[in-house]
Image (cartoon, rainbow, N blue to C red; front, side):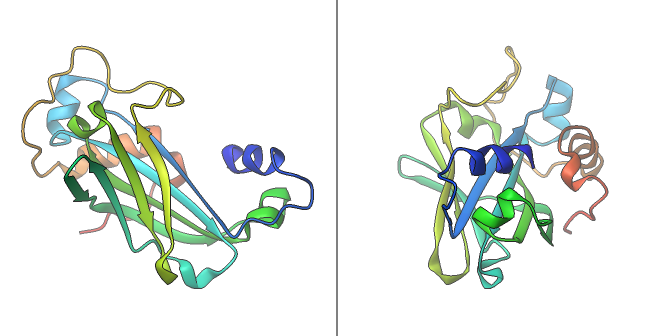
Length: 172
């Protein structure tokens, strides 16, 4: 929520923006956690729109060179922003979703895009990203093919690192 308020504060006082997308990544903290997560990190995508019909998000993809992967959603929810400066600028319709992001894809030039209803696309993250805090801990070996992660590992990382969706039911 703070990032939405910060983005709104940087715009001119009378600005009206039809939609905004933000992303954050929760990386596994150890080799054991990386293995339990099948080689994935958790990507939080937050989209706020003036038009509720643009939500929920239709798809999230990562592209690197000729490779393109649709990221599987593990949890999501629709809600409304409470009246405040950010909702005046961006609208009130809100979507928060957590997706599985292959860690190996974050180590090359890549872009994460979000597809919305109405054919709109938002670029929410680029790799390498100097603005991104953290990244996978040094020394992790993630150069293997990702596999189905354990739901307990997803739940633990989601609850600890992405509290905006803590307790939300995981997608089957």
